[in-house]
Image 1 (spheres, rainbow, N blue to C red):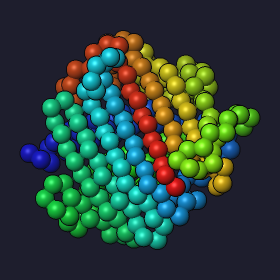
Image 2: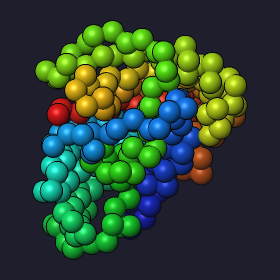
Image 3: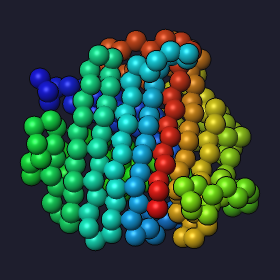
Image 4: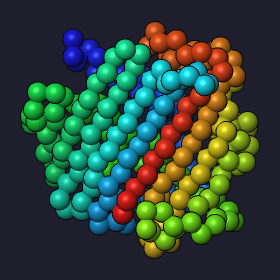
Length: 229
């Protein structure tokens, strides 16, 4: 039963990740991630899906850390309707230990259901490739004590979504805002926030997938990711 709950949440999480995964906005090679440039960092992520003005019907919250040559750790809390799950993973070299509520045990990487929501894992940066287009101007805005610049890509994101670049977005789902913070030193992504909204029952139903959870119209998706390098 416990595994069934994990599968239900993980399947919907993967579906939503594929819908809102951000393609490279630049023709240049992908920008560096913290995994490449930072010696260590802590992170948080919060993804929420629901009806506008209502409590989320689905959410994923993660927090953890990355230390070069010392491994990574990620803690996941998921909610789907009345289902609640938690999963912890600690990885070093080619070994991984997981805890789903009964203590840590040796596991396989494929057993960790939520790697794409943990900024300590390369899978996360494959989903959210936020390379900046040439010519985009940011404003100086330090984050968590790190000198950085914030880039408001909201207008560009809206234009790209209407042109079909975000191929996973269902018809009727629009990008409302997209902000990215990039470290001055190293040029890697420190944080980002994304907001989407759905204006039709078909669009909101597509976000729910086969989960059976009702997401009222209009609906929303928000993603907030933050790193402390």
